[in-house]
Length: 127
Image 1 (cartoon, rainbow, N blue to C red):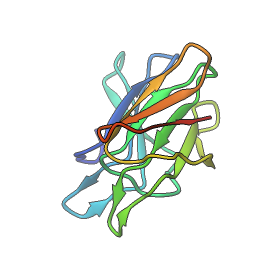
Image 2: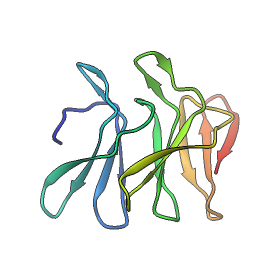
Image 3: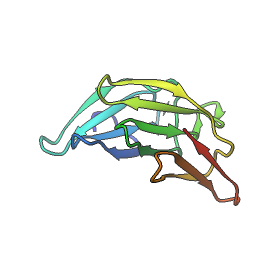
Image 4: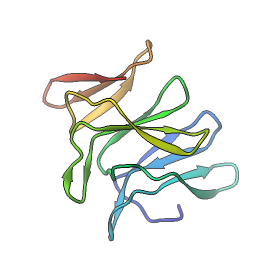
């Protein structure tokens, strides 16, 4: 990676690249994202998230976009916010919110929805 990162998520994209989203390092929460190409071993920067995130989760949706949700940043919890990354443009945009937000795992359901399951036993879906 071009930038040292911890507490990030890596998502395999349909084109074989890996999106590394949200994270922090010794300087604090990072807004930048990176694309890693396993075939070349090279990383390039891509669009920046609108809300810096660490300890979040991400999943690849059926339409090829990546859903990134919740987590923490330098000012505390990102709450129930979520963003979508579009690999065709390299841009992020805000999307719907969740009922539950941290800690959790995103699971892509067969009908295309993403289910967020937290450790307190409650669930909520994000479209």
